Structure formats: C-alpha cells, structure tokens
Amino acid sequence: MQINPLSGTGVTHNNTFDSAQAAASDAHFSRMLEEAERKASKNYGGGHVVNGEDVSARDKELKKACKGFETMFLQMMYRQMRKTVPESSMFGKSNAMDIFEDMRDTELMKQTAEAGGIGLADLLYKQLAPSVLKQEALEQQQQIR
Image 1 (spheres, rainbow, N blue to C red):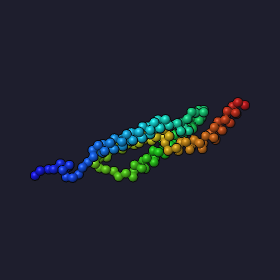
Image 2: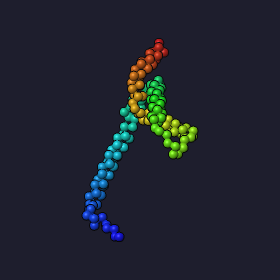
Image 3: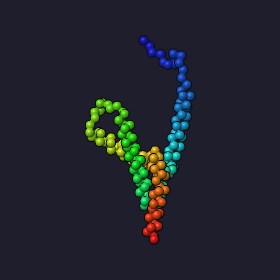
Image 4: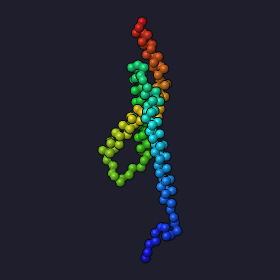
C-alpha cells in the first residue's frame, strides 16, 4: 500500500498566503497589545480620585477608608463568585489549599482596589469628601478662635 502525498490528492495549499496572513494577524495583535499596555501604564491609577494627592491628613484617612471598603466589597463578591464554581476532586481539596486560595484572593482584591477597582472607592469619596472636609474646616476655625 502506497500513501500519496497531499499534493497528489488534488488538494493544494498556498503556504505563502497562509503564512503571510498569519504574520499579518500576529503583527496586528502585537500592535493592539502594545497599545493596550501603553494606555494601561499611562493611566494606572491616574483617573481615580482616591489615587490623587491628599489635601490633608483627614483626606488621606478618608481615601484609605474608601479603598478599604472597596477591597472588602470585592473580597466578598469574589468569595461568592468562587462558591459558584463546582469543586473538582481531581487534585484533592485540603484546608491548606483553602487557606492559600483565600490569601491569594485577598491580596488580588487589595491590588485591584489599589489600582482603581470598579470605581466604588471613587464614588464613596466623592459622596463623603465634601462633608468630611467641611467638618475639618470647621474644626480648624474653632481651634483658631
């Protein structure tokens, strides 16, 4: 029994066209990825109010509290999302793995909130800042008198 090569079966492939198309696709994807990386590094934390400069010590505390609240919210949301994923007994499940996943998720959500998160910290800060800064100004006026 003899095996005929692909070219002998009547099927022809244009390898030059296929490779050129693949190279063009790769180049386009690389440009898109570089553009996304450039935008991400340029805007990292820049567009978020809570990542801006602090006006005072109380302003700094308020921003820290807003980020902390967003971190806690994201952690709770992530835990609930993880509960919806069916557990696999393929690798086994242990307390150590549960603790590791919880610690990893906590740190991931801290970094997410620090980078701007879902914008909850910004919304809280915008809502609370006027009253907190007004209260601080009143306290400073009373100290002056």
